[in-house]
Image (cartoon, rainbow, N blue to C red; front, top):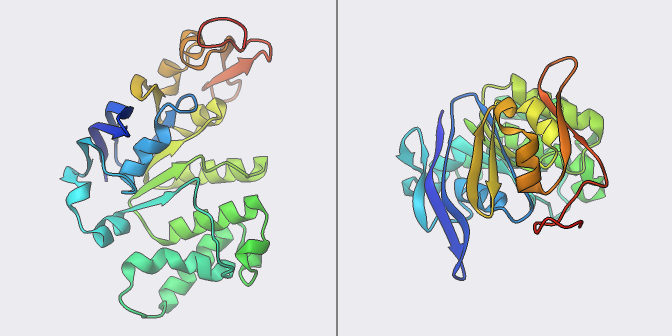
Length: 264
């Protein structure tokens, strides 16, 4: 299933947050949205999972205007893991994961045997099955993040939206999550601050700066030393990974500059 951000713009209180963003996620493709803080990445994602309506342009799923669809229908196709995706009530892990089936249920119908097995498999996949009976508020930040990923998988979406999904995860679970995305058949739009993880996990990268798209293409095409200097304000070397050949960014901690070009 394809996702198209068709020249979307978002203005809030008269300020342009996203400007004429055109971006396509092809079926079973992983596209990484990267850029400095405040560049509009999260705002763009919020338009896709319908927390915001763009003030211009449209979000299209297989050509259909997403905001013209019933919410239940779009929720069956798209699921999102947001930076605000916390749980305020102390449900058990099993209950939180089961909430992923909500768009597919009518009334108070209980989960079927198949759905319970789907929840079990998702918890096992994210290595939280042993926590099934624990209250979610008793978990660490990383454990809770993995529970929310399991909930998203249980929804059985066609399109997966992830906003900084590796936050709170240790190295093992960062790699496990991104490997799972590579193996899935989902269309994925993900924001990542770690450019090396983004280069390894994503088929394409799209770089936002001040609300506009400044570069788009394969990681090899996008991650250049000039772009890192101009967009992120750092001097860095870009070298091929010795095993995979994907570009890797080598930083010098003294290399950060302000946007005006003077040392930060």
